Length: 375
Image (cartoon, rainbow, N blue to C red; front, top):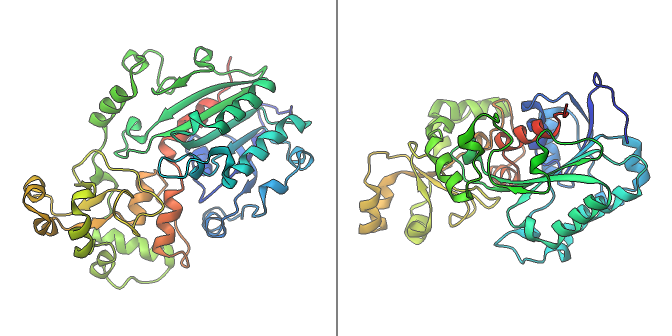
């Protein structure tokens, strides 16, 4: 076990680091930590990470790593957000047979071979991972190496963010260290416990996921709190790229939904208003496609949407539909305001990278709980 005094920072390895959502979550949780290495194979994601943090993740094949090489880092904790495609509802459901699952399995299988294995692990993935063969293999490895686990399925909706993006999380601690709330060991939880005070009985109730979702939805902030104004749209362009935008009108036109797409897919898309308190998950294909990739924003708040649905798509054109901007998607993922894309990352690439990222509002309190040392 890697030795650590209470004064020194936690040493962390960040696998599948993407655009830095996990690192931002550590910062939001105010954990005294040092990321000794980040790993990601995506060149564009690493450009964004470098742009925001000033250091570039290791871009080699994770499967080239050995137990001896990982031992050299002497990391206390591993944070992992492996590829979700093998486990998604829309995917091929190849599970552990999918080549994209192999690197995660490789890393897990190195744990028993290490002299200084991590004492904590944090794993994030899509809902569905918890019933996969990969999950079973992971839990078998954890059990054989004396890890205690707590599992969660949580959504930003439960943290007052009007964004439906349920995700699976596994928190693991290696004995003799333990969780602050051991009564949840080896359980899969759908509630905010133990992320709220134990005195809060309303959130401590072991309610069904549907009930949690309903209660959370009612307490969410409106989408308007996460939107940009025309002026700030221009400002984001200037802040990120260091040059003047052509004008707010031109910039907004980039995100208008073409009428041809409204006519074709109008009845199949999810439409929300600034006053709405929920929007659908944004996937990496948002802005390329409109069906099933994320909500569209109606900018004509006073238009009668129900009448438009019953009368036909010709009236839907009056809704002033547009895509959420990359900055707004980042806001719904709870990225800080100083997060920014480098100039050479195209709009489509920005959406794709955000679609593969995580919700900081959910991950930060989970990390804070994981790194809390029991008394």
